[in-house]
Length: 159
Image 1: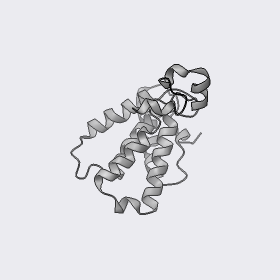
Image 2 (image 1 turned 90 degrees about the vertical axis):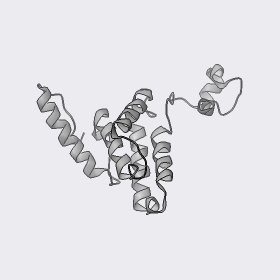
Image 3 (image 1 turned 180 degrees about the horizontal axis):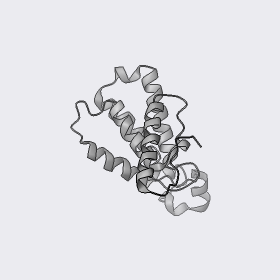
Image 4 (image 1 turned 30 degrees about the horizontal axis):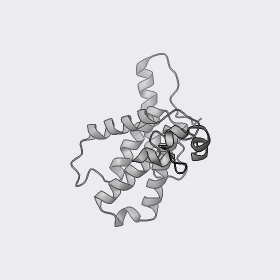
């Protein structure tokens, strides 16, 4: 784990200082390909997603309050299942990677605010409530989730 990671400490004041250091480091790494979600706590990663929202410049032209973004990001985190891959760490990893390449390639400069919002939402919500199993698993073990169809079972969730 990274040296700035949140550690269990005796007092809440010390924990607050540790998390501030952790978030400060995370903010400095958002635009780096070396950003690693596993170096940070889930709580810090919520703040990282909020920071990316503003670095996508989504506050410009859209009348979205910061508190609404905080609630939205927190809700997405709560809706992610605790499975080995399709989890909150994966969500933030994908979102940061999308942000990194969109920024580095200059693509963000060519996009409208609504297009940047769509890109951000697609990254943050791409695996929302993913159960962590494949379509093949659903076809062979959980047909009840496929609404009677034998293909693309996981995609039925998006309807």
